[in-house]
Length: 95
Image (cartoon, rainbow, N blue to C red; front, side):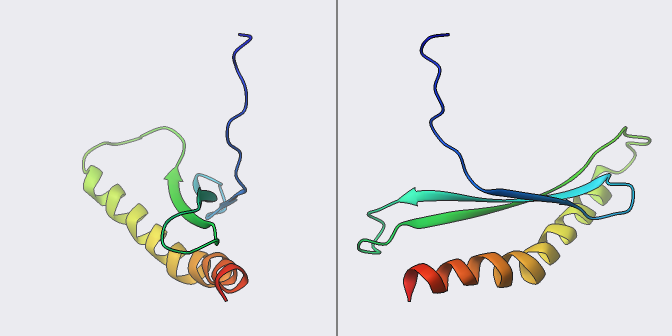
């Protein structure tokens, strides 16, 4: 289509959380633009996603899977995303 064009592109990091690469994490940084009470500083959002790939062998208790993935994304946020991505970005752009 002649009207198609790229309107956004962000840095993204993805890695495997297990040996089989069936459990994966992704971190994406997206700018939010100016005008959110930060003066001339552009703010950003940092999205963390954890997913499991591959076939579903049993779907007896989806709550167990959700609980496992939620635990992994919480650990990812506290151990990697906040100290290694959010805090350096904050230090660079807000201080």
